[in-house]
Every structure is written in C-alpha cells, then in structure tokens.
Image (cartoon, rainbow, N blue to C red; front, top):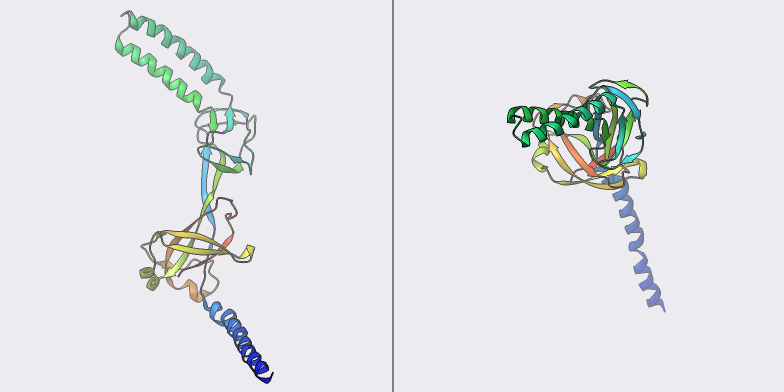
Length: 246
C-alpha cells in the first residue's frame, strides 16, 4: 500500500515542473519573438471616362462585388450612336460598290476605318468591370455630364492583399522572394495567415515615420513586400498585420 502511494507521488512531482516550464515559455521565450508590423494594402483600379457624354445609368454601387464584364456605368452617347448608324450605312453602300468594282480599295478601306472607329467609341459608352473586384468609391451621379479623363469610380481587389515591413540589412541574407511567412491579425486574437515574400527592395532607406520610437526611425532598413491571399476578403486595407520571419 505504501509502495503505491509512493509511486503516485513520483508521478505528481513533474506536473508543477511542466506548468512552470509552460509559463516560462509563454511569458519569457515567446515574448522575445520579434514581429514586424505593417499596414495592409490592396490593388486599386481607377476607372475614367474615355468620351464626353451624360451618364444615363449608374448600376454600380459602393461596396458591391462585381464580376469581370459586369456593367458598372452606362453613358447616353446620342451623338456616337448617330455617327455609328451613318458610318454603318456608308460602309454597307461602299461594300456593294467595292464588290462590283466601282470603288477603289483605298476609299473602301477609309470608309471601313470610319465605321470601326465609331464602333469602338460606342463600346466606350458601356463601362464594365475589368476583373472580379469590389466597388470602393463612386465619384459621379446619374445625369451628370463628364468629359474624357473624368474619374468615375475606383475598384479594389480584396482577394489578395499585401503589406510592407522593414528589415535591417543583416536579415537580407536570410530571406528570399517566394519565402513563406506568417502574418497575425491582432483584431482577431492573433489569427495566423500564411503569405509569401513577393518583393525585396535593393535600396536602403530610413525607417518610416509611423514606427513608434525615434531610435528605430533613424535606422537604415530595406522594404520587404509580403503578399497574403484572402479569398474570404477578411483582410482589408488599413488593418495592421504583424509578420513573423523565421
């Protein structure tokens, strides 16, 4: 009986040691792991008008997800529609004359070029999404008259985001493009996200001003771009991401 109690005591002795070891790791060793902080960014696409016209409809709304080819904005384009009809009529007449030999190749090509040009400009009246994105900002309203170069809306691609971190020169030999890294999102209790290094600057610079301490800002560092896939669009521009480099 005494032997059994003695055996149980021997089993219980390591438990406090294990607990102490875990606490030491959490509060001392783990805290020494340095995390580089960066701000999440994403690709933005500015869409501008190529023609002068009145906006007849603006189905695209801020915050909406759009697929490639979805209509974002429609121009009225009354003058361009009229020019296209005239150019099409002239082309059909020229095509008949060319086939019977009553029109030269040069004149026929000129008329065909005018038709193609008017068709192209008419296509510019319908502005569609160039890729699967989300509408970030709209700048105009239905009924407004716009000219070429007027910014109409901005799209943003949230399926893949990135952040820049800044590392000291001795660390450059230990990292490479394509290397996998882990980012942690403080807003979600340090949830991890897997990413990779997509760019390493070849020029040193002073640490950006948004770094907390003056001492850190006086150091020369190298910018490193870390890209993170975000198919659920959970990572958004403006969020802080803490990046761990092995």
